[in-house]
Image (cartoon, rainbow, N blue to C red; front, side, top):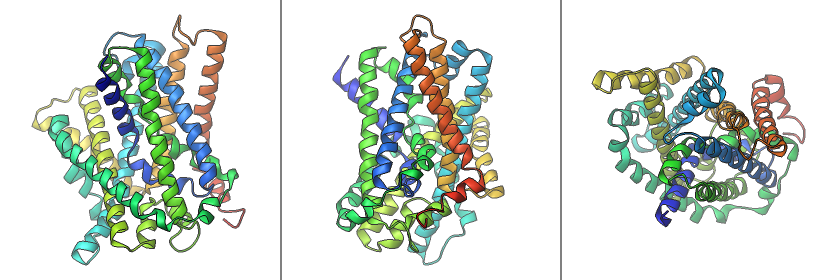
Length: 404
């Protein structure tokens, strides 16, 4: 096994996890503060890593080339197959809805910056599917080069923020702490550590070497954890919690962290870094998720890959999210909270249930079953937290206490 394949796998894992969800992390954790958010990050990272190990174990027990749906069907039967389909479709559609919702106000603000007048949000909703949704027409080969350029832009934009924002950070803002609100951020944070769908591909790429794949999962998932903590330092340390452009207002409106950042710091370097980072983060995530959903629909519905089939795949991929946004305008952070429900079901609960059904595995012992029960409990805890936030009374409680 070459060193290149190991580090290539590490970067694939990190790249799959890091995306537009990063823009919501400081908003979702703003009520609890910086120190409590570290505990939430560590908890979610550990739960998702353990679920990834379960995912790996199930995949290694099957024949080469087995993927998520076939894994669930083999271990859990028909109900596992149908739940996997439901959760997978729900996750991908929810993420696309979140990215379109997040892109519209950013593109509208950019339009005003360059042309001197704002672009109507309704029109802005169509820009992402029309301009970058065409990537599903050309498939993975056609967007490889553009995706690499976008990733370079994302890295450069983030470096700009890292260079200029620390001078505006204060220990007073970072010192704010309210552990009682930590649970609120669980659905968004857990979504930001999702990389499990590429594990079947890694198993093939690394020639089913269990030990090296587990090590790649550990290192690859650790990179997003470090980057997220650094991002938390920059945003929670520089933007006040309350006030006209505070993090609380962004949380109430369901906006990303870029909105208060750009409003509070009208400096050219930070504006450029903020616009660039938000744009590239959304686009790179949007392209990857759109390709995954279109491929799933083409294969699952047996749609041909001819011109008419690709047009149908485009419509099935983007029309439902657009219709949903017109009927039920949904903000970015709120959409990601819904994604957390599907992540918990698809990437935590189902892997634990699949591992439970394995025979002669490390999890078939009494201690192994106990471990799986803990993972299942974590999954349903996050699901219940997510569902509770859909109740207006519960959400309103978050605005009480400590004058929040």
